[in-house]
Amino acid sequence: MARRLKKTYEKPRTIWDRARIEEDKKLMETYGLRRKRELWKIETILRNKRKQARKLLVGDPETMQKRKAELIGSLNRLGILSKDASTDDVLGLGVEDFLERRLQTLVWRKGLANSINQARQFIVHRHIAIGERVISSPGHIVSREEEEKIRYRKKPLIIERAFPAKEEKTRLRKTKKTEEREE
Image (cartoon, rainbow, N blue to C red; front, side, top):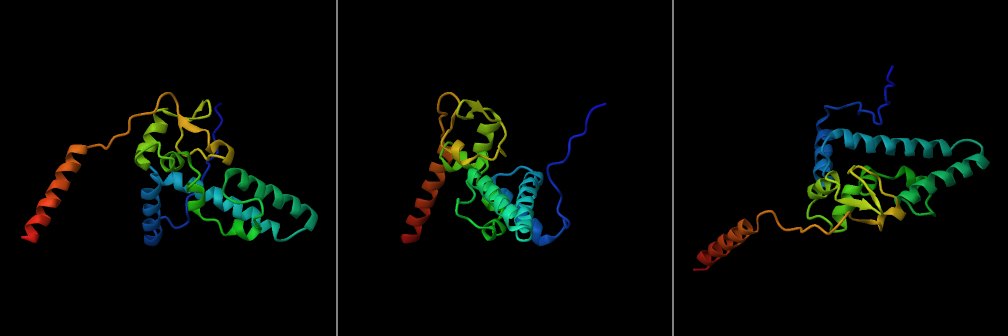
């Protein structure tokens, strides 16, 4: 009998809330997410980290100090918080902090792709590697030490605008319109 895998995300309680839908849509467009499931995975990770931080506020001070160091150490390795952060900083984290650590976002921010969607395509098509390891998952959370190892797998890809001739035509049209207005 095959084992069923556990879901790595939880759906929000109010899926059909208009404000939530607008906010999710904006985040998905900004960070190039393909499905809401990707956003829900990040929200679940954030929810679990916040839950751990809330548990640190009550209990035995000795064990809580050790657990606090572990929690902040794990977030520091991911590059989300600094070493001298507090539990209030963990509670103040947002979804954007985790979305900024995704491989797709970092490839785009480093300039290896022209757009966030092109970064996703490069990763899925196995053109991006971290060190010697090829990663084909755009949602891979990149640690601080892996960040400088992000590179093209083989040779740098030629990144050109999709339609340079079309952009030139629109530029010429705009200059003609401004000349007509000046006359």
